[in-house]
Structures are given as structure tokens and as C-alpha cells.
Image: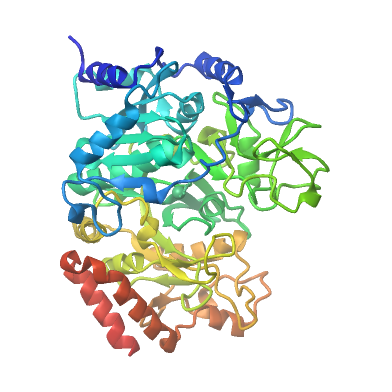
Length: 588
Ligand code: OXD
Ligand code: MN
């Protein structure tokens, strides 16, 4: 009997009309075969894969994408529920039947002359009760290899799909790479992602943002769990006790560095489980348990060095079962090594830039694309936590919501209770930096760091978050962090990086009840003497400034939050409105 999976593949084959169909088996030999194929496949700026110096960068390859295809495209990313209201003000929307017609037209014959890779993959450990079996097709060798790094690919997953039709489906084609023929469409009610016209990570490696966050968040809403844009880490204290924490931070706020931090506090260390996505389920013990559905890192290369993130450097230089891919970094042709701005050592005299064009420092432009990436297996990480491969995941004691705010938000804040914590997450924001286009210092709201990734109406998501809290007998505590507060001269008040462990220590001390806290209208802040500052050259004044809650500034904040919440008014949970009103009363 033909299974639902086979039937679905046959339908896609009839539509896309590939020259060949190849079912991926996940074996080790397969990785190297696909790399060979890619090295012989010409694209407009060279072969799909270029082999780098294997003695210095074991198993590393360089890929250059189409220059018009280097980032996620939010304006072309749609979430198609039957009504616009169900998708919410936070998503672009098209009526599902109309959207499917658009995609069918773009997909008709789109794989002609190409190989269609069929990828059975799992998000999460195959034995995890929380994992999801998925099936995807793609006509990109780069995507096929990347999916092997980012997820668990292999024939055994087909067994899991055999007698069921509830697997998550993904159709991906690079199409013509014409931005006018590009869409990333989500149909959460059918568990379907349909992406045509882009080969870039977030648009094309469908297991990541599309499945694990947009489709995952909707499944979580329906099934009673949460799919979050969060780091998962274990913090080990000086007595060897480990506390598991998740943290949601918008991009460019140091999420990966936090997940792989080298502690500046003696005796403490971080173990990593994931740097981008957490699936959170309530366990039989009434606690919140986290798994990382992914199996790899898709990290930003510029700025990564032995100084900023030695553990990541070790990971990408390790090489193992799967290759490490570099996308849109520069190439040192003298040494055949990858290069990016911020890498250790002197800037090479001569390079090829991310588009393969000759480059010298005198050109005054960046050699690596600012969003150039590495894709590496998480098992290569020297600080991988033992819980990373546990099917049930790890129990979470604290959730952190963070952002980049030069003013207003204290270094660390604890919420009064779960509902207040959800409100803290809902009003989360980050200031734009010089790295982004547009005005610098404007606060962009990014609730729970999920604004581009929530696969349904954000107000329903907040209600779901609130319900999750009431279903747990031992919920984690919720905290806010802000490493970026500045003084009158615009200098950072807090050293950040490894010293952030001092803040994590306070969070753990709160969880264990070892310290008390000071109440402010915004939440609970540390008593200055409770923050471990030994070895830090920080005056008491500066410390006090780090924890200051300035009522005048908070009146502006509540006005901005009111405007931000307005489009959700019909669906806004009463608890969020109450939290907003309480804060407003306290700061007026
Ligand atoms: C990512 C992102 O690439 O959040 O992880 O954009
Ligand atoms: Mn991310």
C-alpha cells in the first residue's frame, strides 16, 4: 500500500517535474557524495561548494548564495490561516486557497532538469515524546546538506511516517531566484510550508524558523506546549549543581554568545543545549521541560573569534560526521581559508569577497556579507550538555526575556508572578543599532523575540502563555535582562560577555531562595550587595544606576506599550490589560 508520505511526494513530483528524485538516507557516505555533487554544480558565482583547507578547517566548505538572496524576507513570508484575524497583525496574510494557487503556479515545472531531494527528518530526538516527524523536498544541494547538519535526517524517520499522515510537509525550490517570484508561505492548519525562490537559510532550511517556530508555535497552541525563539543552557555552580535556563533575545543581542559563554565568575560554567529554538512542554512532574528541536548551529560569522566566542570557534573548526558550511564569507585564496570581519589575526592583504570578487582593505567595503553564516553540527560543541540528547529534555528553572535598551531597563529584573512575566515578554523591545538600516536608537517591539516567528495571532499566543503558567505546579520564574544600559556619556555601564554569569548567578540565587530582592514598579531588582562583584571594577554609583527604575522614563514606556498593543485590542487577554493598567497606575 502506498503511504501518505509516498503519495505526497508523488504529487509534488508531478507538480515540480524534476529530472531525478533522490531519497536521502542520512548515512555518513551521503554527506560526502552530496558535497561532491555540489562541487561539480556551477551556479552564477562559482560551484555550489568550494572545498576549504582541510588541515586548518576540517570538513569545511564555502557556499556563495545569489547576491539578491542573503537574508530572511519578512515581507514575502506569509502565514495563511483561513482569516486574517487568526494570523494576526503580527503576520502577512493571504487567503489560503488563493495562496496555494499562487504557489502552484510558481512551482509548476520549477525543478525541471534538477534533482529533487526527498528529506525525511525529525525535529527533536527521534525517541522524544515531544519530537515531530517531517518530510521535505528541495532542489538545492546546499539545502540538502544543510538540513543534514541542522536536523536529524535519515531513513528510520520514514518508518515513523509509515502509518500516519500528520507529518509536517515542506516544499522548497530555489525556483528562478527572482525576488519577484519568491514567497515563503505557511499553512499552519495543514502543517505545510511552501517556499519558492530563495536558497537562504531562514527561507529554505525549512526545519528552522518555518517548522520549528511558525508551524511549531501553532501546533503548540493547539496541543498545549510552546515553541520559542530561545537559547537553552545549563549553568553549573561551584558545587557542581546545574540549573537549566532558557533565554529569548532578539537578533543582534548576543544570544549565541550567551549560550556558549566562558564564565568570568570562578567556579561557574555554562553548558549549551541550543542557541536558537526551544520547544517547551509541561512534564508529568508539573515542571517545564525544554528540548532543542534542532541539531546544528546556523550562526552569524562576522564578529566570531577566539576572543568573542572561543567555544564556537572550536565547534566550527572541529569537523565530524557532518561538514561545516560557510555561506557568503570571504575567501583567502593564498591559504584557501574562510575569512570575515572580526576574525582573529591581521586582515589579509588580498581576498575574494563574499561574491567571489577580488577585494583589498583599501576598497573600504566589507569582504564578508554582514549576514554571512556558518552551519555546524551541535555535537561538535566542546561544551555540549549531557541533557542535549535526552529525549525528555531538561527541566527549566528560569526563563529570561532580554533586549537591547540603552536606557530604562535595569540589568536584571524578576517578574512578580507568571502573568507579570508574560507581560514583560509581551512588551519586550530592542533599540535599532547602526548595523541596521533606518534610525538608530528606535525601540522595536519584539514580544518574546517571536515577532517574525509566531505562526498565529500574537494576542492568542499571549493567552496561551498565560494558560501554560496556570497548568504548571512548579513553573519557572521569569526574568528580564538588559546588558546594554549606558551612562550619560553613552558608555556601557555593564562589562557584559563572561561577566553576565554574575547576573545568571543572581537569577539562580533567586530560584533557590538564597537571596531576597528589592521591589520596584517594574519588577524585583537585586540588592546591590547580592550581586557578586568580586574582581569587577564597578563603583557603587554605577551599580545603583544599573538597577535604577526611573519613573519619568517609564511613563514614556507605558505610552509606547499602549500604542503597540492597540492593534490587538479585540483579542488582548484581560490579564495583559490588567498588567498594563497596574504598571500605568504606578508610574503616573
Ligand atoms: C536567526 C534569526 O537566523 O533569528 O536565527 O534570524
Ligand atoms: Mn534566531
